[in-house]
Length: 492
Image (cartoon, rainbow, N blue to C red; front, side, top):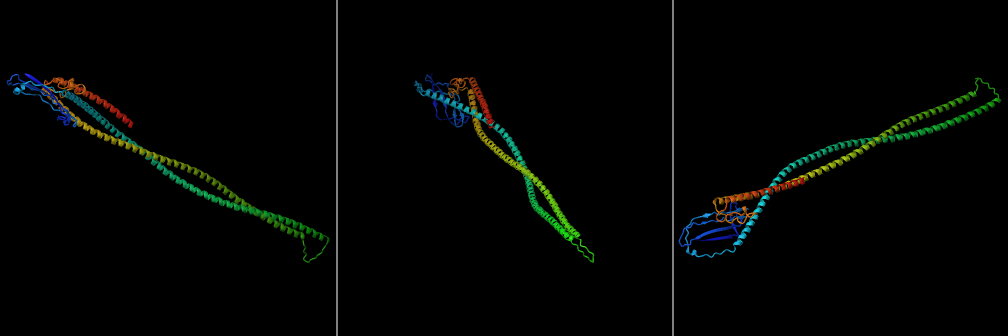
């Protein structure tokens, strides 16, 4: 018997593989076939039992759907009648395909590329999981931010209500002060009217005083004139007395030397002394009466003028005291008015400042509320985007879970059927040169290898992979949590 072994590897540039993960994209597949044939040495026809084992045709990576698609090759064992062809007994010219090495190299490179793409896909899954955790943290922070925002709104509303109460109090105080100012202005007008009346009274009294002074001056002039007249009359009386005495002396001298005897029947005598005395007495009485009348009139006028001047002086003093009192009251009221005006200006300035502060506080609160609303809107938009990405990631994860389950079923089916793995995953998968150090199907062609060793290798690889994934995920969570806390502190 002569046995010929032919190993052939073919490369398909476009392969459509439909696996359990729904991989329908373009990909790479490799196929290795082990063909055994038997030829009898003799020319007799013999029934020979021949076994032919096929390795599993490789699985392609569908980049469109994001999943792995695989097809499983089943080990075929059959018993058939073999007809010996005499022409086949001729010696065969075995030719080794010169491109087999390059094809194997290309297969290895493509498998490495697929491994790298699978590693990048795992990194993307990790990144999306971290993004999911970050979104959950952001969502919790946004909920806390919403609570703090409500507290800030309540605080601003309380502050604005307090400012409004202060503004209302200042407005009421302003109205009260305006009423007091109006009352003060009315009092000032009343005092001004009284002051003008007193000024008019003072002017009238001064005019009366001037008139009385003129009357006093006239009375004094009359007194002087009367005194002059009295002196003139006194001189005239003295002159007449001297004249009368001289005449009397002369008459007495004339009569002394002459004697006249007059006899009258009525026996009447002329008594010149009595006549002179009588005339003197009359003139003296007239002069005394005139002097008394003049003195009485002068005293009466003088007393009247003194009483008038005294009453006018009292009125003038009273008027002066009232004017001084009014001046003091006016000055006091003016000072009070100035103080009220200053207080009013201060209150108006305080009201304006309070209104300005209130407006600034309201504007600041509105700006902060606007910023918080914008931040909340952006956070909601980011959250929506992240939720969308998370949904996409979950769909991809679901597809991957289905693909992994499909691979698991394929592997379990291969282990249970006893078939061998070909070189579909040969050459290593990942960074360590393959699962379990030698890749799938390390037991050779047709034998199927050790299922227990393969299972242990797969379990070790899965444990190591998931441990690394968990560690990396935990580190990323801690990093994002620190970043979010630092960002939130900066915002606050």
